[in-house]
Image (cartoon, rainbow, N blue to C red; front, side, top):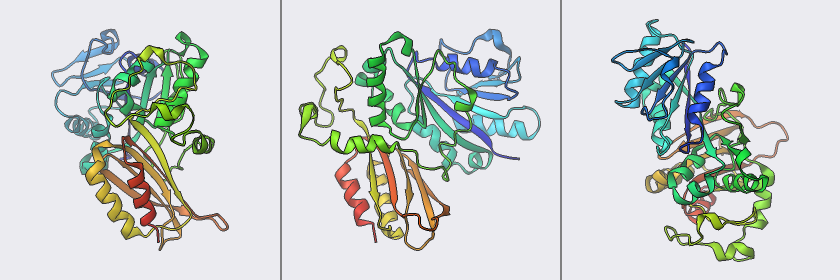
Length: 355
C-alpha cells in the first residue's frame, strides 16, 4: 500500500483553520480525507456535515471524509486509522491534522519520523500555518506559540488581509519572511485557497529543492547589519521585553527583533561528513528544542551527489539527492530557523566542519 500523505494545519486562533478545513472537506475533489482534530474546541467542524459518532470518536461525513479527535495520543490514532484502511474498514486518501491554536507543531511532525510504524504508513507532506492579518501584529508580539508556528511552516496562508491596509499586509509579510524565508506566503480570502496549494507540497521531501528567496537574502546582507540605521536601537537581549506597545508600530520600515529568526550558511567548500555530523549532533543536543526547522542542500566530500539535509527540533536526517550537474558550481546552502539561536556559534561550527 502506498504511503498516506499527511498535512499538519496550524495557525493563530481565529485565523480561519476551521473555515479552510470545512472548505476542503466540502469540496467535491474526489479525495477522501481523514481529519484528526487535536481537540474539539467550540470551533469544531459543524455537526450538520457529520453523519455518525462512534465511541471511538471516528465520524464519517456525508462526502466520505472522516473526522476523529485525539483524546489519546496522535500515534495511536494514526495507527488505528492506517490499520482500518488496510483492512478495508475505512476509506480515505490522506490525513489532515488540525492542531490547536496554541500547540507546537514540532512534536506532531516528529511523530512521523520517529515512529517506525507510522513512518511505514504515512508520508508527512507539509506544515501549513494560517496567519490572521488583522491580529497578527499583536499575536506575534505577545505570543511565542504564534512565532513558532511561523517558523515551522512550509507554506503560510495569510487570512483577513481585506480588513487591513496594503501597507500593513506588506509589513507583515516582510516580518514573516525574516522569521521563515523558506515558506512561500499567500494571502487567502476566508479559506478560499486552491487545493493544489494545500496538498502535495512536499515540504518534507528530502529531494525537494531548497526554496529560499535569493533576493530576500541579498537585501538582508546590507539591510540588517547591526549597529546602523534604525535597527540599532531596536535590539533586545534574549528574553528582555520589547517596550514598544503592540499598536504603535508604524509602516513597513520598522524592524522587529523577533526571537524566531532565520539565517543561512553558504560555502563553496565541501563539508567533511564526520565533522559535520559531530557538530550538528552536538548542536541539536543543546539547542534542539529551540531549533524549529533547518534544511540544506550540501556539498559533501566523498560523493558526486548533492546531500539533502533537514531537521525538526532534535530529529534530523539526510538523503543523497541528484548528481551535481557537469559544470554546475558546487556549494552548500543551509537555512536555520529557530528561537534565539546563537548565530555565531552555528556559523563558526559549520565553517569548521568544512574540509
